[in-house]
Image (cartoon, rainbow, N blue to C red):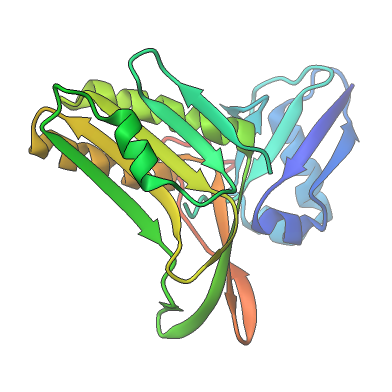
Length: 236
């Protein structure tokens, strides 16, 4: 059977490719995909404890069986093109964009008459990392999976806290110092729930949504090491 394999973040560098077709025997599992490339690239094999796999835009266990035409993605730890949008009937909305985040428009879209609090968090590009001067950042993601994961965690947070609406927007592409790469918006009748939900939102987004960043310095560049949520199905 023929499947499509995608590589993201630092795994593109490790494996020297961003995608390719792979022929596997019938009944092969997700594990077989990882093992195939781990045999080719020893550095990938050494990363097994931090690599997560996805099948058709959903997290996959190593033993999950594959079918003809499946899309399998190899995902490095999250560090937390097209514009993708999802909106719920309740008014929650989630976006991935290459445009500058319009904070005021998002706030106006979220706010209702019942709300007494509106909390906005923006994650911005700073000019250094551990004393090393940063020139810029570049973000990429597994777009179809990222928007679905973002919406799932947003809905879970809306159910967990006493808020009326939540929104999440993340940018892709190159960002300069001082630009916002991500924004979380929470509207609520009361302020504590809004603050708590916004903090939970950014913390979980950075661990669960497949978005990666590369940091550029005057003397080099590096994919930023992140960390998966404890529940993500690693390869080892």
